[in-house]
Image (tube, rainbow, N blue to C red):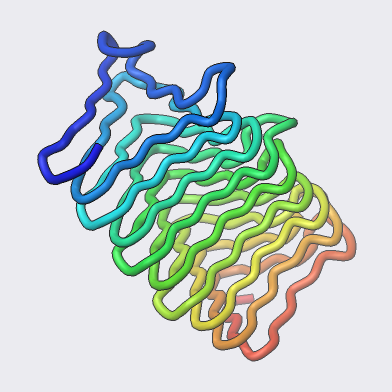
Length: 238
């Protein structure tokens, strides 16, 4: 979907209940939205899926993927790339949805690039998924959760921001991590490492990175969790 004025719009009567399915039981699919092209899923769509080595790229100013309700990046080896001023907007984004959903990636990079959701889940049910926010990009929403074994988030580069109006939770299981460096910034109302359970989860703030919260809770109901500050700044009210 390329160029200003190029639009793909899915409604309840157009395709599979208004949902955009990138895989079903197949794989290796791709969708590119570029140079001002736009894709709309809704207003009555509920479940937009990517699965099995599928890829979506949103590139360039005014390029937009607007999905109603949920985007599920599930199964394995899927990627969503938002770059060079592209944007994806929806109610909830699930990266690594399902117990076997692993090795999925989400990259938001470049000034003006935006991912906006009311809720963002990184590996909530699956292991080894990753989110990278870099080079001045913005990820914004209500709340975010990172959890269920070896899921990672990196916020790096001047002007790169991850902003949660409500809370951020890192680690409901083991070895989930957030790294903030090279001028990247993360802002939350409340921040938790192992809020309900979990071990060996971590937040590392280094190289002029900034983590700013109201309350910050480390290992509230877990063990061997850590906050490391190495040349970065952590601000909290407690």
